[in-house]
Every structure is written in C-alpha cells, then in structure tokens.
Image 1 (cartoon, rainbow, N blue to C red):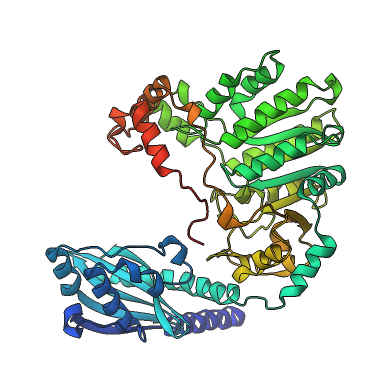
Image 2: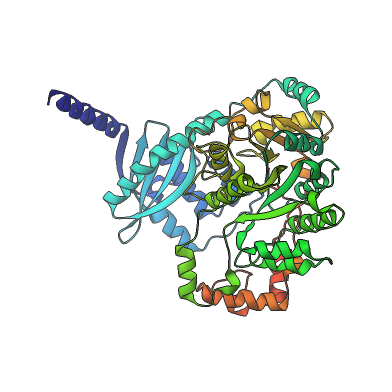
Length: 518
C-alpha cells in the first residue's frame, strides 16, 4: 500500500510538472488594435505581423517568416497578390483570445474564427525569431486549448530535430577523400552487392529517368543474370499472370504493360522508366537460356480497379485493403524462401519502403500502420541478407547536410558514384527526417548512389502512351464507383474527362526540373 501511495505521488508530481510547462496568457484584443508591424520577437508580435502579411497578400515574404521545416513547401518565387477588402477586414478584425507557450521555444496563438470555431497558429523559436509553423482549427475554446497543448509537444520534438539537422559538417575535404578512396561506379557497386547479399533493395524515386536507366545498365551487365534470378517490383500482385504472359510471349506486346499500369491507381501509373525497364528485361530474357532467365514478381497490394462495378464493391475493397509494406514483405519472404532458384534477388521499390530504421514508418510513401517493407524483411531474414540502397535526394530543406554531400560530388566533377554508408562520414551524418529518433544515414540505408547534380535533373519521365479515349472513359467510370464524379482530377469535372483534357493537364503539370525548389 505504501508503494502504491508513493507511485501516486510521483504521478501527481509529474502531471503537475508537465502542466506547469504550459503558460497561457490571456489577450482578448483584435489584431488591428496592435497596428501593422513586422516584428517576430514574440509569439504575439509574430502572429499580428503574419496576419498583416496575409491581409496585404505578401506571399513573397511567407517563406522567410516560416519554420525551417515548412519552408520547402513555400515557393521561393511566390508572387504577391491582391486581397479583397472584406477578407482583409476579416483577418485584422479577428480577436486574439490568448497565447500558449510550452517550455519556452514553442507557442500557439489562439484566435476567434467564426461562431464556436477557433483558429490557432503555431510558432517555433528559431535563431531568435518566432516563425510560423502551421495553422489549425477546433470547436469550442476549452477544446481548442486542449488540442493546442496536445500538439505543442510534437512541435517541440520537431524543433529539436530542426536544431539537430542544422548542425552541418564543416570538414569538406574529409568527404571528398572518402569518395576518392571508397567510391565505386554505381553499376559495378550494385552488382557487387547482388553477389554478396541475398536481397538487394534499390530505393527509387518514381518517374525518375536516371534511376531507371541505371537499372537497365545493371540488368544488361553480363554478370547480372548469373547472380540474380528474381526482380521484385512495387506493382500490383494481382497482375502477376499478366506479367508472366508478357515475358512468355514470343513477340513483344507492350499493351500488356500499359494495361497493368492503367490498373495501378484510379487514374493510372505513368512511370515511363519502369515501362522501358520491363521492355529491356523482356529483350534480355529472349537472349538467355531457360535456366538463366530472370523472373519478375509483383509484390504490391492487389488493385482490381477495372473489376469494381459498384460503390458497395469499392467500399468493401477499401475496407479489406492490406498494408502495403506487410504485403510486399510477405510475398518476398515466401518467394525467396521457397524458390528452387538459388540466385540472389533485386527489389526495386519507392525509397520510403526501403528504409531499415524501425523509427521511420511514415516517411515518403510508406503507410502509417506498419514499419517499412525492408525493415520487416530484415526481421524475417538477417541484416546482412538485406542490403538497402538510397539514391541522392535533397535534404529536409534544400541540399542534404547543408550542401556538403553535393559539394563533395561536385569537387570530383559530379561523376556518378556509389559507396557504403556504414562506418563512413556520410553514414554518420544526421538523417534528415522529422521522425522521432531517426538517427543517422547508416541507421536507415546501407548504400548510397549519386548519379547527377539535382539541379541538372529533368522532371518526371512521363508515360503519355497510357492516355487513350478508352482509358479516359474507364477513368470516368471509376470516378462514379468511388463517388468522385463531381471532383476535378484533370482540371475538369470527372464526369467530363476526355483524352484531350488528360493530355493537357499532364503536359502542364510535368515540371521541366524535378528539384526546382532546392
């Protein structure tokens, strides 16, 4: 009984201490009572300043007064706009109810919105400035304050990660020297890993041309088919019979692949690189003896979109939708462990699914319910069995590690290079993710591939061949099944979708440069 009493006292003390970390300052003044200002020295001043920037349409200034974390989502080239008078008045006539601060460096300003609805904007203290880091709403003042308190703890964790990320390395030549000693030609590097490891995972960025060109070089390496018997791909597993037919056909039938891609998502899957990769693999297989042919296994969740005829069928499909990471791990585990082919395996999958860390389960394209497919594969095999490679991508805000990685590559003339992350300067660097305890690069991936400077890389490599009159009609039918007939997926109401509308939309949407905002 005495122990229970002491425990209860500790709980009460911890709860009291936690509640004392929050300071609520009542305000009850309209924004306009403070007058127009540009002052980010306190949360209240920052809120008033931000409201006036909104009221004056100063879009060009939003990036500079926003948190490091959300800056990438705000264009560097945003243009100022005119703001209707009634909206200006709405912004400056709002009543600021109070300011909530938590452990000093994070805060939220709560404001009346309309009726019982309240808005609140978060601010984080970064380099002595209180910077905007997002807005939310809630119903009822007490519920609003409760929601703010629940979320400020998360904002504090993100702020701590921001501060960690911004501790950039300074010894430039150490990184260059590592590449000189340990760097390898990417094609040869991945082949070496396929010889050594049971499953090699290449974490790709979708519709990235240079990435798929590397994969084509690898499969056409004369060593590849001697060491690798199966390629797993992030495509719908219910299309396995279709891809088997594609590879067994004596004549090349690209329409089979196009139809597979049309089923990948409600509006299709437009990755030209993946399409060309499968064609190259078909041609390679035709030149190989039967026992050396390479099998392709689709590992992702089934997407039987063309067979769903009613809204009820679609709801049932959604209700029974499997976790994608677990699905891919299940198929790969079963196939590898039961295959008579003892050659090794290549798994080409989106970078988010290729992460080894158990703490990063919401990054990139990974679903929220389970750890990544590769983390699960490591659990089912061994860490040495599964070798995961990441491509060169931007960091959390611009170039990775403050541009240090890019500097090292540029110093060597931007020659393509691949290298191990384990026990390297690159691997020891902070991994630029906002997940809790994401750790370092080597905690998340085993290898790293650089192919070309980010600023030189072209935009999405797009498969326009999918778009036909028949496919436009099929998408229109699907929109009815998913109850999205009146939404706009291609800048026109879905019930009016045409081939021409789709082509116009995609040609406008595809950017000339992939990383235009670094």
